[in-house]
Each structure stands twice: as structure tokens, then as C-alpha cells.
Length: 317
Length: 209
Image (cartoon, rainbow over all chains, first blue to last red; front, side, top):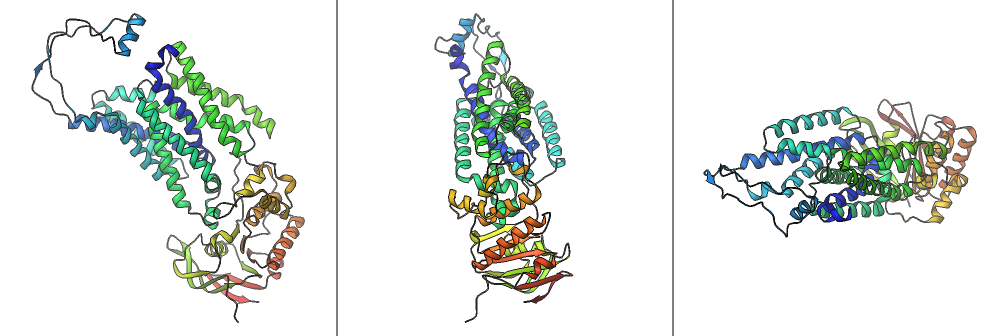
């Protein structure tokens, strides 16, 4: 794992950060019986990514047909870590391009950037989370999930590389996460920790009894909007970096496992992220060892752990 | 000198989303007294309590309050503790210390003692019986050291022992200068109040002292 660190670290670090961040985001959702809001918002973030790809494709201009220079030698670059890795692994370098004419379209730089897709994912997720946060029923969440799923596939079908992106988001391979994603997720993790430390009682009272919170002088609507906006941004960023399976698994499963083990909410706030990060560390190790996508490995490990801790809950009760 | 009411509702219409539930021509409550709000189910008792707390804005009119929102205690009819999160009784009671309130172990301890649940401090909140839950909710309201305590149907789902205990606590609180407003069906509880309001047909029918 260490020898591949320089190649995969953004994906691994992003995965660990998501596994620490999302259990903190998920506590109010679990208590308010809104866990499916998590998967719906994540799916809507996926729609945002595909929408950004489509916008980029729509804005693309096609230049004159041009002749590309023929490459006669295998394209290797000693300084490129990917080429170095391929050489070490004995993978054949890229075959020379055939001598032919290519037509290449150009998108505006901003439309091609990762940040554009990430912002689109977070924006749609934020809107979806704030709009559906007030709904206690599953029907609206189901409606939005189906709409976002179908919309993603239909848009992707019309967009170059669109279906690849949909597959990446569903499969949770984590290989496309960037250092920028890791930095953003670090900032969100810090914000979640600070939020819980500073506003623990307010958040819990709003979660459990918003009417009492209002009678006690809180502003539940403001608290709710703030929480759902943050949840939307966190889920959008996680979805973009890690995909649907990993995002939903990280939101729910470490929290369920920790919930079965503790008697105090205070302990839950510490243990849930610890369980998430530890499981994620182990999952990335297993995935790397057996060449598997880390998202599904994490989901299965965390689901197993949550199931194993159920008897502890009964014993504790 | 005339005493200033701690809360005064005059010529106001209360309700939700623009739909009128209760018309109040004159409602007053003073420091150091117990006030009973009587009425059938659906007469608007809970609506009036929420408006007194400041959680519900009147559709029309205004509510004058000589008390900070941080000095208001509120006991709803039932507690939404939920069994999905682990939470001890002490943690639940400490949720009363949300805004403008400093958390301290002594404050928490004294609220638990006042509600006679100090032995249950480490018990799971969701595992308590109905009467114990009511005491726990009372402790959460008392931990705020309220000047205005609003209780929605204090007689709901409790045994005689708990009922007598809560009554004594409320009387002691009023003797210490707080105002206790309780919405109730029970004439026995109403009999202890210095001021009574009857709600019927969407209006506050009358005041008796």
C-alpha cells in the first residue's frame, strides 16, 4: 500500500475523511428517521455532476479538422509517477497514435475543471437537502431519488464520457478523487467537529423536539436550514469524491455500529467517526490488496460490523 | 402600585399558517402565581401556551412579555425522546441549557433532585416509564431556573404519587416567585390556581380568580 501511496493518496485520504465526517452529519438524520434523505441528496449530487458535464459539452466549440503530430515512440516520461508505476508493474506504455486526422472539441476551461463539477454537485445537493429536510415522509424523497437517477442517466446518454461518470459515481472506485477533494473534505470535517462541540445541545434539542427548542428561545427554522445546508454540501462533496455506495454507507453504517455500543450521545459523537475511519482504513487496505473497488468493500465491512454489534445493544438495554 | 404582568395577551388571534385557532381578548399572568387554562381537547390550550412561550407568533395582535426567552420553561404533553439515539437522563435534562444558559454540574444535579430522579441520572432516557419521563421533562424545564413555567396537561399519563409530587414542585416554584401556567382538563389541578381561564369555541371565555 505504501508503494502506491503517491498515486492513490487523494482517494484514500478522501475516503477516510468522508468516513469520519458523514457519521457526524448522519446523527440528526438517524434520530429524525430521515436516513433516506442521505441517499437521495447524494443521488441529486450525482445529477449535478452529469449536468455539469452536459453543460460543458453544450458549450464546446469544434475547431477546424487538424492533423495531430504522429507519435513514433511510446509516450513515456521519467518524471511522471504514472509512467514510473506502469514501468514497475510491467504495463505496456501507450501505443503510438495512428497517423490520422482528429477532430477535437474545446470546452471553456472552467467547464472542464473538477471544481465546476464539484460545485454543481454540492449546489444541487444543498438545494435538495434544504428543500426535503422539512419532509418527514418518504414519498418526496422517493420521488426526488427516482427523478435524479433517471435524469442522470438520460443526460449522461447525451454527454461524452457521461456514462463513465455515472458508473464511477455508482461504483465508488475512489480513484478519481483529487488533492482538492481531500482539502475540501478536511475543511468540512473540521466544521462538523466545531459545530458539534459548540452547538451540541441546540442541535440535539432541535433534532428531537423542535417545538420545545422554539419555546426555549431557539430558532428551529434557522437551525434546520443551517443543518440541512451543511448536510447537502457534505453529501455533495462526498458523492463527487467517492460515489453513491461509499457515501451512503459512510453516512449510516458506522453510526449504526457505534449506536449499538454506547449509552451516551457524547460517546456516540466520538465513537461513530472513529468506527468510520477505522473501517475505512481497513477497507482501503483490503481493496488495495485484492484489487477491488474500495467503496463496496467498505460498505460490506461496515454493514457486517453494524450487524455484529446488534447483540451488544440488546445486552446493554 | 399596580403589578406588571409577566405576560399579557390582549386582542390577539392565535393560530397556524394564517388559520385562526384562538381569539384572546385579555390574558394576564403575574409573578408568583399559578394560572390554569381549562378547556376541551382542541380548544386551543396548547396553542396559547406556545404563544406565551414565544414559539408561536400571533396572527394578529401582540403579546407583551416581561420575561426573557431564556427564563421560560416548557413541558409539552409528551417527550419525543426517540429510541434511535442513546441518551442518558442527565443528557436529556441538560438539553434545557441551550440558549443563554451556562451548563454546570450543580445546576443539573439540583434539577434532577428537584424532580426526584437523581438516581436515574445514568439511566437510558428512552427506557423510563411514563411517570419517570414526566419528571425528567420537569427537570429539563427546572434546570433553566424559569421565571415563567408553561405546562401542557401535567396530569397526562402519570400516577397519583407523581401527580402529587409535581403539584408540590409547582407550588414551591410559584412561592419562590415564578409564574406557572398550566393547561389542564383536571378541575383538581385548576383548583390550586390563583387565576383560571376557560377556553371554548375558539375564544378565551372568561377569567376567574
